[in-house]
Each structure stands twice: as structure tokens, then as C-alpha cells.
Length: 125
Image (cartoon, rainbow, N blue to C red; front, side):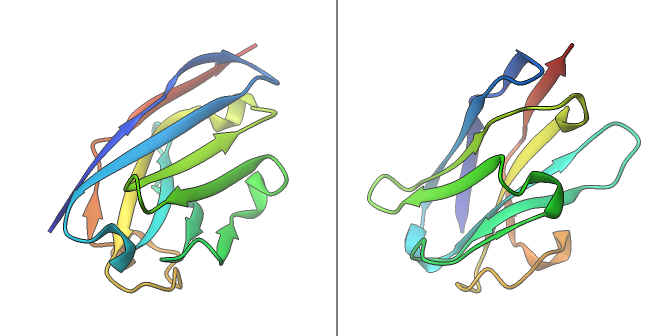
């Protein structure tokens, strides 16, 4: 079992930056691949980025490539999402998720075992 708590969301203007954090507690953090998902009103939850257990392998959805960076600090049991050049369409609730498979192969909601409560990111013009 692992518990996840996101922080760092807020209101930002287009072109701005935010850094989301997800703090984990419970079992060994490095046993899990981690990911960030997002869900906008009326839309399905979609993967944004994922990172494997060691941080050596990452995945990004096409719509964030070159703008967002996922990273993790296993000593701090924390995963981060640095979001730059934010666009209006990035507005969503962002969720942190953990996968008991360590290699960050899954791209779907069903592939992740534990979820945080979400943090709101609102991008305004």
C-alpha cells in the first residue's frame, strides 16, 4: 500500500510555469513506477508523463513533449512534474499515480494501482 499526496497546483497565466509534487508514504517508493495524469472537465483522464523506478526512463504524451519534465527523488519519496510554457488547454486536475510494475510501461488508468486526490491547475489568458 502507498499513499500519495499532490501539491503545487494553482492559477497561472499562459506561458507560465508550475511545479507539481507528489509525496508518497507507505511501502518502498522505489518499488513503483510513477506517473502524472490529468482530467479536464467533461474529458477522460489521460496520461501526461511517467517515470520508471530509478528515474532512468521516462515517457511523455505528445501534447507535453518539450514543455513538461517528470522526475523523482527516491530518497525523498517524491515525484515531480515541472510544467513550462503552459497553455490554456493544460487546465485540468492533475493526479499522481503509482504502478507496482517498476518499468513505467503502462499508459492507461487501469495500469496504475494507487492514486492521489488530485491538484487543480488552471491556466488563464
